[in-house]
Image (cartoon, rainbow, N blue to C red):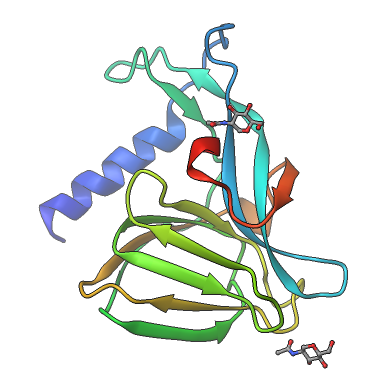
Length: 178
Ligand SMILES: *[C@@H]1O[C@H](CO)[C@@H](O)[C@H](O)[C@H]1NC(C)=O
Ligand SMILES: *[C@@H]1O[C@H](CO)[C@@H](O)[C@H](O)[C@H]1NC(C)=O
């Protein structure tokens, strides 16, 4: 395994396990996340979700002074390299999972709607994909228009659970909400 990858996994493990301490009034923010969800008609929809779990100040060595939002217990994490100009076609989320785009670009669209979400790798690259075959009939379409590879880390939630949240609004979250 390449060293960078091992370091990444270690880092990720640390991030997911960072022990929360009491939140202070200075960190009131919650994490808002673009989500590919599904409605009662079993259609995929793009929504901006506000997670119930708040950002919590870390006291852990190395991150003291930073704030973390817990993503919950998670399952097998994978690292993916998606070719340049790749068309992922129409599909359902295989499981409920976080997808952290590190580089490149993903464009999510829906078969029967004009809603789209453009996700750039990097600072605003985390989304939740929850339109599993059980929840959505047709799923969504993902294209990767970048001239270089798109890099994504997929983090399934434990037991396919959808994190506790409220819907902020339809459509993708805006940068100023993240
Ligand atoms: C789009 O909507 C129509 C009408 O509701 C439906 O018959 C069709 O199956 C939908 N197509 C997809 C790909 O979901
Ligand atoms: C998430 O949205 C809420 C409500 O609009 C806002 O108060 C909060 O600051 C947002 N979180 C971030 C990290 O921007």
